[in-house]
Length: 287
Picture 1 (cartoon, one colour):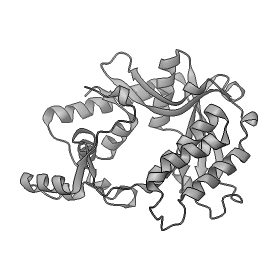
Picture 2 (picture 1 turned 120 degrees about the vertical axis):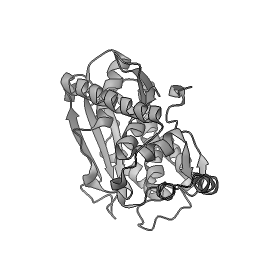
Picture 3 (picture 1 turned 135 degrees about the vertical axis):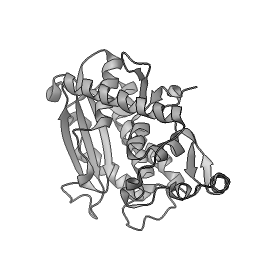
Picture 4 (picture 1 turned 60 degrees about the vertical axis):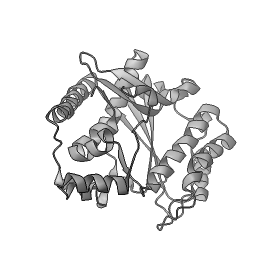
């Protein structure tokens, strides 16, 4: 395995067996519906159109089209709905008018950027999709990654150390052949009942890296990539049983791990799972 992204590696760090089931066996539960993730992805589509075009109608349209397949799912917390997403986008545009942004666009093609870059000096490639790259001379005296984070739990994000941000900075440097050492974290917290009055609905955090930080990320990342390939070679991915209840819910593969009879496991897979290849950036797919 030579092509890796942040999700593959973070799943492996969480639990090698879980990564294997999702990324190598390509298994997803038939009933899986991750409403918060779908809501966040739909908002990302809206933000991308806003920064590409500056057109509020296209911004809202992109969100609606992305969220419509999930619009009939009821969120028992009352935090996620089509109307709430449109409200978030409206309030966001009021809070951050494009004319007042402390950064400048590098062009439409620099939002929702798919990438595949080589890890220098290794056989490995790193791929993914980042929200945007901007000219942030007012903040970082150069280029920066723009990263949207939608959340209903404000305190979870740690800007540094952060493998995902480090990887985006490395990738953008490779793509543009210029130093990129800063990231603007654009945090949208939709937990408050009254979004318009909440001080935490829209916040931004700035985080910087040195060349040494990025070099350290490269070393860490290559070690994790090698560990994955060691498990592939030995045909065994160990279970991290401390992660069976990660994120306050059962791992979707926990019942597979509870069984040792391969015939039973295969019957469960046929009954409760479907095949879905992880492909956030199809052009990076490894043959």
